[in-house]
Length: 203
Image (tube, rainbow, N blue to C red; front, side):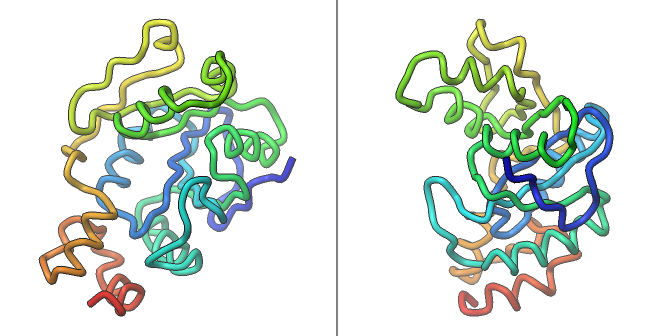
């Protein structure tokens, strides 16, 4: 198994919280999820896959996204890594290969992402139950409260964020940039100067 590659930080602790995403660009909602998880895990890692399972790289390049994440992580004290696989199960296994020991892997996500993961057609019954034996979910309300299926609830815990992350997304930042609307309140201040450079063709 290929191990995840750390861009900032190194494997540590026995419980890791992973925020896997496109980060196109990073937003204050990402930071809210990270801050909410700090007391629940030993280490928080933002993970950017080299390839996405269901979409292509558009907007910022991999290098541009890592540049923004590196800037944000330096100020907000989380780690950054890249993976070959883009599915949660692939990322969890790459994390275990990197840590070299048995670790507790928890993915941080919003309600919408959790519902997609739990209801996806994996082609055979019992797949999600099997995957949740290898990782668990920390889920923040997003566009409504999340109620996990009773038989999976023991592997899914709520994550309470300090701000409402419902209307904050990378796609909303890009939409505002394209339409000439204010976007800076949705992105961490430390990358306000980078965003126009990286997304300059949209401005």
